[in-house]
Image (cartoon, rainbow, N blue to C red):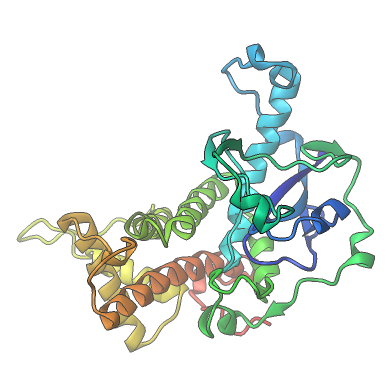
Length: 356
């Protein structure tokens, strides 16, 4: 077993710490160098996490020609750590309305080098763009490295991240990074959900990881590529649904040969079991399945994912509500599934709505 330290980012301020048992912890990176940067939109966060021996991986592809860091031993460590890190980022994002992320590629971009320490006069005399790469660097600060143990001093430096009532967190004006001046909070259910996740067996965890991955893709694409994001949410839902019903064998109609228990009904019942149960919700879940089919089978796409469009304001608002509703249903489905595992009620179809 090893412990590893890395850097992730958020668009909204993360001002406390969160630790889940001996699995991982996250807390803000504080540095005098960061204090000199006047404006930035990606807030650096330190993440420390455990790597079990069973999680070790050895990629087949040889990258040693790229340098020492890609030689066999170092490459195995990097591959193992980044694979685990990506799973943890997806897992944190499942519970959060704010997006956590890391820089995954070396692609650069052309930009005007108007750094925060330049005056307006200095910016006005810039004559050309520079090509820059995404890279986080602080003199004397090491990350992407093995550590002896978790940093225990964070409890002296920071307060714990506030936990908000589960229903209120997702229902009462949730902050999907719309207000980056606010601070990040987590829902009260997060510890139940994490305990349920880490208690899963190997087979179930693979399915949950896939479902969570698609949920995260939805979150990342919801604004600029809304249709892809929403389709990812539906894929996430159906990944978990198909696993849950893997042993279900519906009877076929003797006259027409079609299953008596339609996919649409199975979809609706699954959401009623794990998201909420009422006549109004039943109608909404049926509408969601119809909407899902509309995207898949008719080529429907969200008009508001285009920066310029001529959609009336009320219809544009309807699209915004629809995409947020789908993402919220997706998140709550997985969170409830995990939390009910912890509570030992998964087979009873109880809805998690009173956890504090």
